[in-house]
Length: 288
Image (cartoon, rainbow, N blue to C red):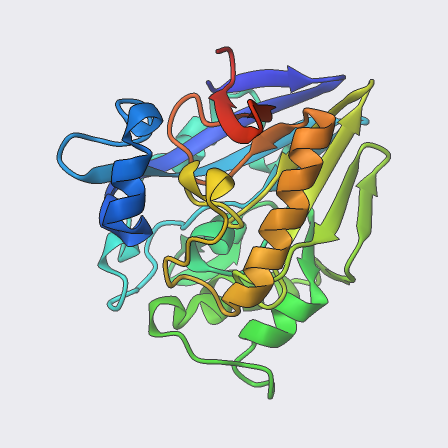
């Protein structure tokens, strides 16, 4: 699903790539116990699940907002072969929406992992320059503090090495960054909120428009099984104890409000609702 609405907001999905990941990362016994609903939509017969790397464009309140601009081309990531030196038609797919990079008003990165901030910049003539030249890049101060290698809060992660220099520093030097706090109002309908754990400054984006709600959840959840079993620790978090607190808080909100859940990596149709059925949570894909 590449275009849908929430209230008066129009949302476009831009895919960069899809890659198979091992189901075993969620625990083989747990996968087996959930096989009745995982297959065939959320799991593959070969023991993998499809991780989609995608961005969202939200058009609301007269503004164009990009959330989580994927990996980007030409990043040297030797410790993360999946994203190393990509060459994808992401920008062409972006333009196919009818929205040009220069039309973007705001860019928000839920966190500063390679696959959520890469297209902040584009490689031109050997230099990384801002992809969205007229946008304000809204970056959480806690996340900037966590990933700037020159600051004491930095913790080295080989898979993310060099990302700050390639995808963040150039937009700072261009004067396009607004460092924001825990809650930041992007527009009357859009607000960022803290969702710590996956990274120390991870955020989510709440959309409320014309009586409808949606949550852009970044990497709080990588796969629907984590909505049903938030206790799963796949080893991808700075602070999993905090991730668990964040997941449980959001899950309660999703069930209580019926909000649309818009994660970063779910396979088609990419979004859905979390409901309680017979006393247990059930994730239902959009349109089902």
